[in-house]
Amino acid sequence: MFYLVNTPWWLKTLYRGLVWQIPTKEKVLFLSFDDGPHPVATPFVLDVLKKYDARATFFCIGKNVEAYPQLYRRTLMEGHRVGNHTYDHLNGWKVDDKRYLENIRDAARLIDSDLFRPPYGRISAFQSSLLRSDPFNYKIIMWQVLSADFDRALTADQCARYVIRDARPGSIVVFHDSEKAFDRLRGALPAVLEHFSGLGYRFEAIR
Image (cartoon, rainbow, N blue to C red; front, side):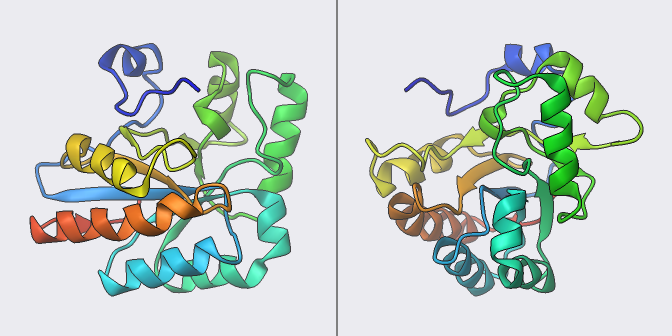
């Protein structure tokens, strides 16, 4: 399984219209969670974030919002932001544009947000251009640091170390509130929050 934990400069240059980090000189991190809501992982994440008075951004799959509307509402009520992550977690490189856009529209009926993150980070330049224009007008949010909590070959400690090593002020960090990632998430997330809280960081939602 190939993936980049720390997004290189050249990739950001290729996709200039996408948001990779939030420019700031303050000690702020932007934690984000993909693929929820999930009946076990999402309540865990919300409880841990509350302990650290942290706000985050949840990129939700439409069918999961449909299945767990109470978790979606709780996420909003606790001061977090949500974003569209398609209805079925579609890979933009593997489906035609018409199906991809329809799937995003289906999710948008359930997820009221101007934020979008492509599943797997895979989106074509054409799809990106369409989604950033009328009638969608999305801000497409990518990331600076990937926790890799989806990788079953890693431990929670390794995932935490990736984030601790690479995150800087303004970094957008990706975790996953999903069944697949939960074994690593439940150890990595508290470790990351504890470490950066000790350094005086705040955790804010993407606006």
